[in-house]
Length: 116
Length: 116
Image 1: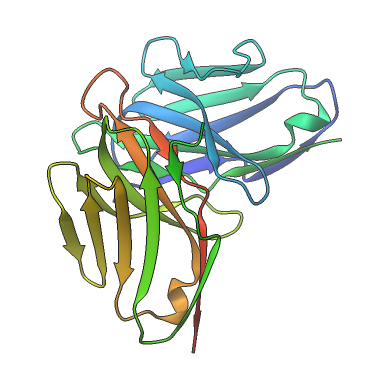
Image 2: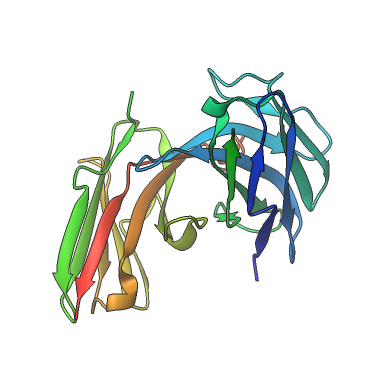
């Protein structure tokens, strides 16, 4: 149980284009999903908290117009990197809290984004 | 401001021995703590957690100890196995049941290597 998937697992795009990453909770309902970013040899940095049916809450320093988050259902959240630049290249990971569970977050496998 | 710190970037242990991973935090308002295991290019996997009202939680080979007065927690793995080799992150949650939706603050991670 508590499986979270992400799609795509890796993507290469050209500078200036937009990329959408999907995060799905497969066997539970997630009222809250989180988006993280990890640079090489660094910790996971929370980008935003996404609640189903409401606007995402972004962490300080994260551009909400650049990283668009939509949480349209209890099992799906999407992150769209708009007008991507090479500095946006990173490993993006989502997590989800089980609506009926405790405080553990279950993580997806991550998406490697490379902007050329 | 690094609120959760893992001061040992790496730890090497012999198979069958105990692995002790340490974590310190500065925010006394954290009310829930978690340990995650992570392989390169994958999402973190939840291992074990502990509420701030407890000082010990055990699950199989994994035990987490919490010392609130010292703002310190540790993860003990006994006996250690080569398959335990990975990066271990501790994480802390603030107001896990309230309006912060349980967002996590991660430490920098400790690379554990278990030698056969």
